[in-house]
Length: 256
Image (cartoon, rainbow, N blue to C red; front, side, top):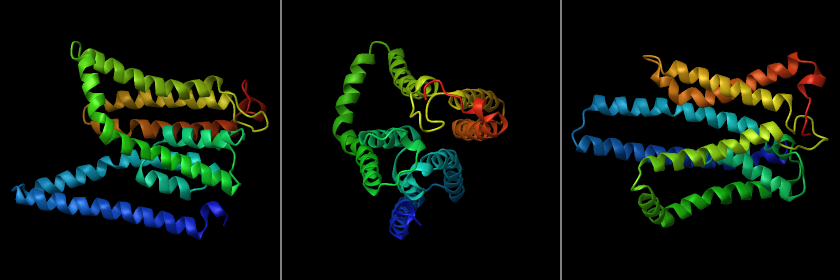
């Protein structure tokens, strides 16, 4: 067992997970107790708990996909710790990649991290970066809301435009990486190429299909699962494609 998955890291992960579960149980018990004090029927409370539990499945699938994405470079324990508390694939991958590149190492998370110093730096960058929203949000959110409210008060549609633009900008960064991202020429599959484009195309197609299916009667529940299922489906299809296509074609890169 290497340092990324040793006993210390495993025990640390178990402690973090135990704390998160204890916190969830604590608030669940208090919420149920308060609901009974308000006279809410037990059947309603039970249905609310069950529906909430079911809706956690979709985000959990996305979290598992993120852990698998980071595992090749960081092992399973650190991503498990990180995503048991806060985080998502867009932030975790970006933070880890930036920390790796700060050491002058190319390849990002596509290569295994064997240096404990680099690994420790990545852990600190991922953790400290995710803490900032928790600190800044209570301090800044009121001012931001007031300014945004003034900006969109005359045109409410502008709020939707701003929100969509921020999301599209985030997605565009990952799309650009798949199409023209420059990778380490010594690491196969690191740069933009056939597999990166295939992953992008497969995920878009799967998302469109699942969105159409979710719009059907009695299929509304699928809407929450569309994105994680698209991610996992694209990963599986790309893995199959890498085995089916000739090696020279599957691993061809124009930005390697």
